[in-house]
Image (tube, rainbow, N blue to C red; front, top):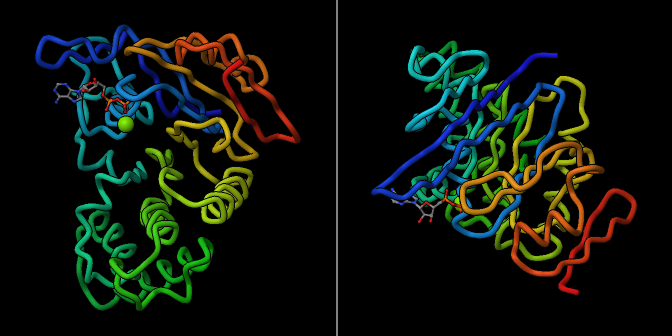
Length: 260
Ligand SMILES: Nc1ncnc2c1ncn2[C@@H]1O[C@H](COP(=O)(O)OP(=O)(O)O)[C@@H](O)[C@H]1O
Ligand SMILES: [Mg+2]
């Protein structure tokens, strides 16, 4: 068991507002976490720390056993896979799908020559196939459906074989079919031996894939509940997190929630 993320008393203050408030959290490589909380709870900010994109205002954040601040971020970042809508917006609409995925590798190796190009292309094609995108490799990113674009973002994030995979709302805005297809792929990936630690931010308990093991509930920059799903995901904890009387039900490893 290897620790991949360790936050100790981590706070983030921006423009006088405390966005993360003394957060303590530990993620090991055999854990698959879901992070739930209302808009503005600080979920994306916490992922940005885990992705070594920002530093805490105070406290200590260790990513892959490297304390942020004491580490060369350019060596650390390729070991982290990060997929978010914000990142997808930066992809030019006319970029070929295979290139969207392959460029993740170029930022790792920092090399560009024929030899690497071929190896990377083969790997990108394999990753695309794993995420059911193999037939779309030559298509332009902008012509894909929402569901396909989300899967391309994840394929790009896993292209470098990261040690921690961070997903910020990968299922948001998907229709039922696309959501279920994505959850099936994510659940399968999460359960594979050799898959990395995963942290997935979502707004809905319905989007927790099978195979995920832990949950972190947060509200107003603070952790409400964290731990194994069976212990930490309760009607009471959800009610506190969302400020509403919520009833949680579980059925064969999938969850649903509604106001009481
Ligand atoms: N650069 C910033 N300056 C000031 N406030 C910010 C900044 N970025 C985010 N925030 C605020 O921090 C809070 C948490 O944001 P975020 O981490 O994106 O939450 P979540 O992802 O849970 O919706 C929000 O209230 C947001 O408005
Ligand atoms: Mg967010």
